Length: 268
Image 1 (tube, rainbow, N blue to C red):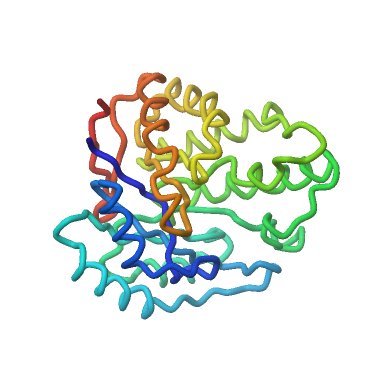
Image 2 (cartoon, rainbow, N blue to C red):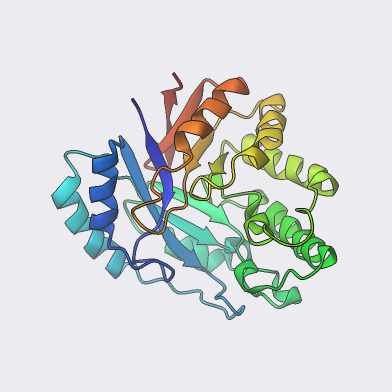
């Protein structure tokens, strides 16, 4: 069975302590066909500080070791999750000039600089209004991201919702953002790019169904699937379920990127 996790992190991300080689080892044990390590390169830090430089050396060093250990047993495309690239396009151009990049996930993990720039992970969501204020800012940024050139697929369109769960009030409705979500998807589709289903370690699946239906209706085709695992245990969690969801929505293929181009894998 084909199984690819196209969004994972290693100790080359500041929020993971697992070396790439350990992530690959577990992927082989799980029977994965492909594992893309997409370590964080965020151009704004957790508190909104500008971080326009990126050190590829640790990534390349760990990648060399991982390829030597598992490169014959596992497809290991080289990826990066690039955050807030639309704020600093010249810095993004420089970062993506690194040879050998297979896959770029475009993300917005932070509020806009006008709103303070903090990572959505750092915010307090004490009231429904707090949630909607954050989401208003987020989707405005995501439209700007999707209009730019610095990505292959748009990352986790529903990203902030993961931090709004388990509050003493219902999750915010995305109805008020329907037009912006449609525009994000349209911009990606019309530029030959795609979107991802991010299962967030198998915890967010149902929220994707209306988005996938919208994307399919507009003629979207390119979809990658990733768990967003930052440790070995959650690798590929929710990925088989996401494949079934794609198929149920009428999609025939999922994608894995090599050399910044999608390879389409037929869903079975």
